[in-house]
Length: 130
Length: 130
DNA sequence: GACAGTCTACGACACTCTTCGTAGACTGTC
DNA sequence: GACAGTCTACGAAGAGTGTCGTAGACTGTC
Image (tube, rainbow over all chains, first blue to last red):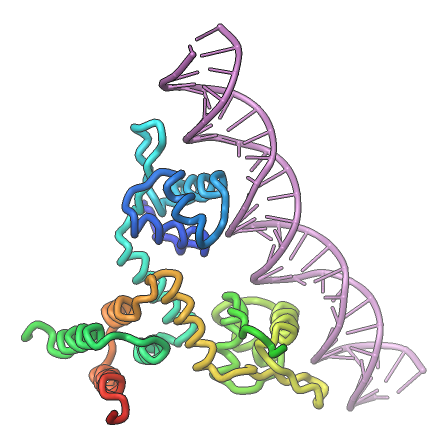
């Protein structure tokens, strides 16, 4: 069977994924240092997490160098989409509208961002010209 | 000091909150039955959860009747906003635009919903007429 | 070839979450 | 007033998470 679900990352795992998304493929040491500021957690903690994430299939690792190099197994967008879908289901009864409204009203989006969203709305409204 | 943070509900707690949001103030038995379909969990489980949530301040309870009646301590929108803000921070680097894009593209919103969102966008774009 | 430094692997611990079993209180019925 | 039914309260067990300490392997330097 296929790898089944892409498994929802835990909080600590998500923090690591964020580092990998930002930095690209990274070693344990690099992840540890990037994480130090916000979490203050040690080297072996990051190592263990990355090992677990590797088992779960959240990251892939390249062992060709002495220091293994870890990368996200799927693009950020895929994981993000899953997280949004999960929240949508669990907290908003599936109403994307409500979620979007909360997201927009709880932050200050720039005018360009708003325009970008409006562009997406137009695209969704008139699907390609069918 | 004030009750500090509104504490993020866990998954099981969120499922219960959803029942209370839908049904309004409810007894343990009512919550248990509403939850039975999706979780198949027993009476004492719901009771314990509600007790814990009451301690945490997620719900308030009215003990005037023999069967205590539980209600959400804050409106759904407040909790939802916190959850969105949390996801925004932890998974999207604070970019509401990306979150909204994922939310909109991962679901089929109706034309009316899209219009509603567009209305909110207009409102955000021209704040009151300054 | 001993030593310092860096790496991975692994086990253990504390903590939280979720679930349930059991006990005790209360209420109505015969 | 005994009994069945329903309620709350509480303790405990099992799984999952996040953290680290320690051990063992490898690499380079003197």
